[in-house]
Length: 153
Image (tube, rainbow, N blue to C red; front, top):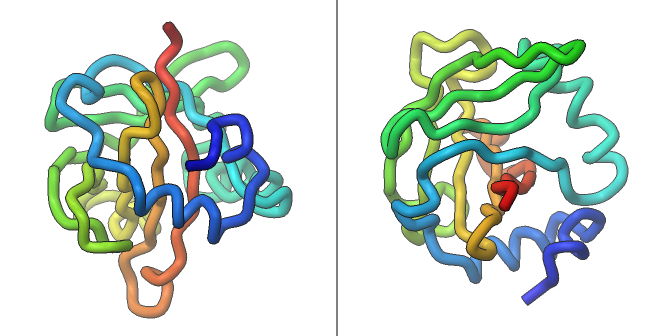
């Protein structure tokens, strides 16, 4: 399997292959705060923050498990932390490969485009989850956008 430091700049196909080898994140990982990091080819890493800004999540810093079934996004703007867009956390079959995964749903009342977004999380190591964002719409659901969530030790 690819090493964590190589995930940052590797190809989307390598990231997807790694994701498919991983197991669903256990309950023990579904607590606390995680810092996000964009991964993948340079063009994806460079475009990720502006894309999130345009979709209402400017300053996205990571995710916080409020409890094992509820998650929120952490934003950091001008040194000020805030939380935005809660998600329901479910364990179910992945949209990517059909294997068990943790899926985060923003819900039908979330603003566009978030009502169609699903974040899938799998355990990479004891402090890190490899995550894939999927826009669950025809045609678009075949593309996934990777990131990692790391818990500071």
